[in-house]
Length: 387
Ligand SMILES: [Zn+2]
Image 1 (cartoon, rainbow, N blue to C red):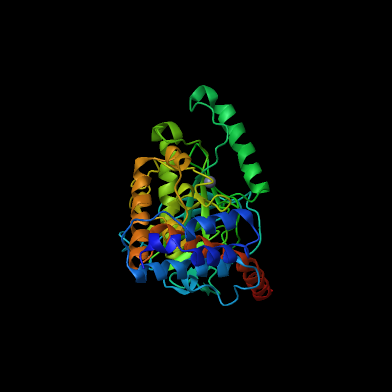
Image 2: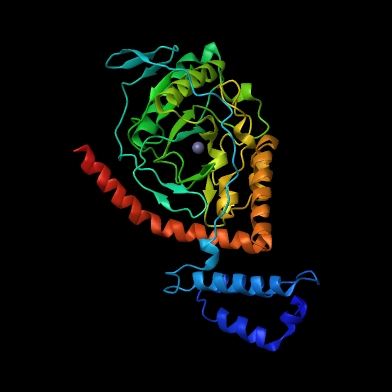
């Protein structure tokens, strides 16, 4: 039976309505109705019609509290992640040369100010295996770096402002330490301050997603190191207006040391705009710092703006207009690549892209609702191991 004829059948309407009546949330109910009775192209196979009906049924099963223990069949489908080679060789060894009470010096010229370092909760990664997205337990080493800007007040970088620049920098360092905001802060003179110790989580990435090859990380505070430039960035700004040459040089040596210490893949060194998500509207980019102009090459990394965004191809997040306006054309390549992957997945499953996207979004919500329990257990285990 063709779909348009199917949608006109009264029994189909009754079936859809009876399913819809089981969905308590009115918005979800409306979404379901729209999905179950869409306006579709005229000619489709009967098999496709049945698949769409099955898809709609699967989504309802997920939406009904208490009936999703077995999960809808869409949730159990493997979702391929795009494979990308790490394009930069493993970092050459960087070692610590000198460690005093207030600073550390490394073999590549990096110097870290350690006098203001603070503790925080122990690091426990939220690592998921792509495909079925089952949680991989027990991984607590850092998996990558998320680069930020502090978006704090910055004075013109001129010698006449020297005292003011120092005063603002000191205030910022105290502020981010109090809030456990980052692992590292690079001030405008290129000094690297360790804020939160590397073994602990820092509250830098919030609700976030990143993935490469067959691994997906969610909420990266625990799994990625946060490195912030004292800076303000918006798309269209020239790099020279956002950061100083000293900051870029410091970021290069810091990135090199961290990659060497933790064997971090170059593809896992990305910006906040690439990983931040907003579950309230399923949009990417609640935060958009470094959405453009991040100096990947100068910091010794490949241009990771072209990496497909895992939030899209694993969880169906959407790059809306405000996100596109706040980011640059380099990052648009990553969005396009992720959308192509999502579309290929849908074709492989013989589903409309929208239906597949909705299923991925449902899967994200389901995974996230189960995560706090798993994280609490893992945190407890990690604390016990420390004692
Ligand atoms: Zn940020």
